[in-house]
Amino acid sequence: MADGAQDSKELSDASGSKTGDGDKKETSWLQNFMVSALHISATPPEKLLPEVTIEGVAKYILSDKCNNVVTIAGAGISTSAGIPDFRSPESGLYHNLQKYNLPDPQAIFAIDYFKENPEPFFMLAKELFPGHFKPTPCHYFIKMLHDKGKLLRHYTQNIDTLERVSGLDGDKLVEAHGTFHTSHCLICGKEFTQDWIKDKIFTDTVPKCDQPDCDGVVKPDIVFFGEKLPDRFAECVTDDMNKCDMLIVMGTSLVVQPFASLTARVPVTTPRLYINLEKGMTGMDPFAALFFGGGGFDFDGENNYRDVFKESTCDDGCYALAGLLGWGPELKKLVATEHAKIDKEITKEASKATAKKTPLKMQSKTSKKKSP
Image (cartoon, rainbow, N blue to C red; front, side):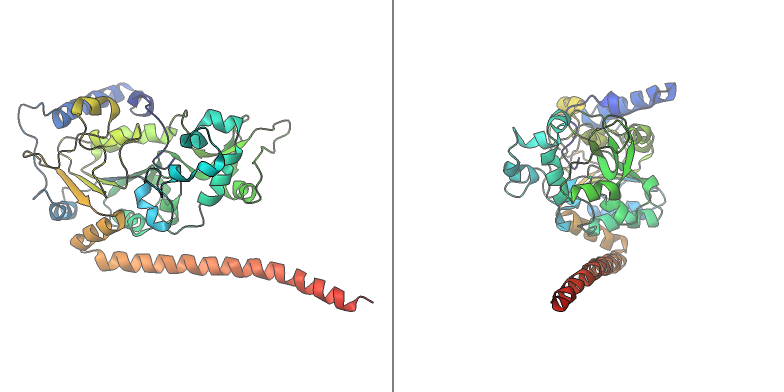
């Protein structure tokens, strides 16, 4: 779920390899964490940024030393597309769920509550369903990192599939909190397509399995409270974070686990850029960060050698970074071109829908005129 799935699940459940190699990598991560968050090191880590600023980040990304950028993102990268985040006062999704008569706002994403009463979730899903929204400049910046050969992987908490709409290859994507892209029956496990479940949701029907002798509810493959993260997260995270030579964090408050722990899993030398309107959970006690993740940044410390905070919206931050990289005009052109394509497709679909309805109305009027 976008910035709202998976409570305090132990990190070992959702990360790491099952092999002996995986055990070594997990040990390496813990050592990295001790050096980074607890400042336990015989010698200071190597400083890779020419300067600890967003300008320094841009220079480093353009260098030969940076070839494996990992981006991690939350709901903040999609708000300019019209999708609400979860926790903002007044406008956040949790603030506006009173109409569903829930025992508490997060119940709408709780698997036990869903099994008992799925209707509220599907009412909300109709509002949030992919297809109503266009990718943001932030999404297209991530796509550009891939096109420039710099992106190792993009990890997202979001379920809106806008990364896919932007054209990002599925191989470069880890939808850590699941996606509307596929759905499965909760009883027999049969897979259903996004188009199939969309038809059900938009006719205000609770999707039910079509297998003989199975009446299970079909749930989109998004991660609810009480469910484990997708297998792909565990398959990718350890190797990706070990290889990461630049981490860019965008639009997440870093409170949802185990996703928030990713910031502490990269090597101690890896520069980290955080683009957000506020610093979120970055100032927490390092021992608390060991158990709850999301901490370990040292933006204001006198010994800070790698952490940069850009206080801005995600779109503005990406435009600023793109400008420093020399990609600014290209990014603006890409956004304009792709949005125009989407608008054209929307208009085309609307015209088809109108054309299907018109003959029926004309036929009805003609019939009335011929009636005696």
